[in-house]
Image 1 (cartoon, rainbow, N blue to C red):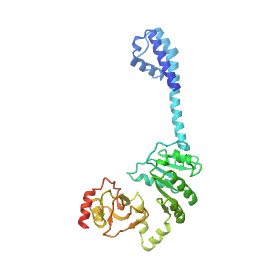
Image 2: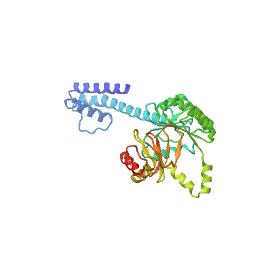
Image 3: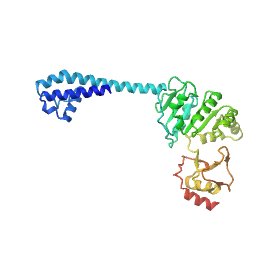
Image 4: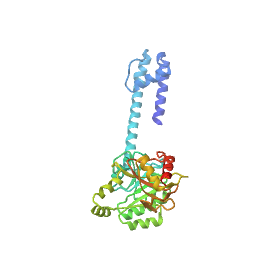
Length: 335
């Protein structure tokens, strides 16, 4: 504000001085602003210049020195502010409390976090901003597109506020160990009651403790051993498993919610989805119990409104992408 005020005063006095020196050609407002800016920035195109002796002395003694000083100060101020903004972003001291519906990643693990973000970004429908809360001194990923909030601990309420965790739509918790993940998940769930909470644990028993307090939380455990046994019994299973979970493959597992007011025969819907969208239904999650999942449901099962359908396809289907009227009609023919 001080710099803008000084620039306004300098411009006003410069115009008065030119008017007093009878510089008629330079006192038109538009011409004056152009002359004042080109002179102050030392560009000096030469298409406008003072014609009187007084005007020339005024230019070299007042307009040039003052303009150059002001414009240099403005440029330096802008550069300093940009550098400070970058530094605050990298140091994790910024506040992102204006964000809504974003993703918050709580914790940083070098072997996991970067890959999590990369896989999230592969999904072209994922447009949500990403905020990472970590106890690192500087941005671990040095990526300006990932907002970084530095926290003393992963239960730091001040850091939660700066990350706008209360308004987040998805929380991903990956602590350095299960105890840190559990405490972070409990603290975060108390602040963000509407967000979908996903937590990684090495020991599934810790996940059961979390479910006592946060029954809607989704617990992920390391399944390398299960994957190894399945590959041993059914060769190639590990590759199929990896392909289903990775957005980098041509066929990946997604989910879609049945619209309100619509019930579908599962067997008929299976054929309709394959016929119309080349998508294979593989399971469902019941609406009344988020922990009640069915893999390969029976043919005659009825899908109720708002239940979650899991399917395999080359890309994610949005709710509006599916022709639900046609799917419903075709499903009834096979019911």
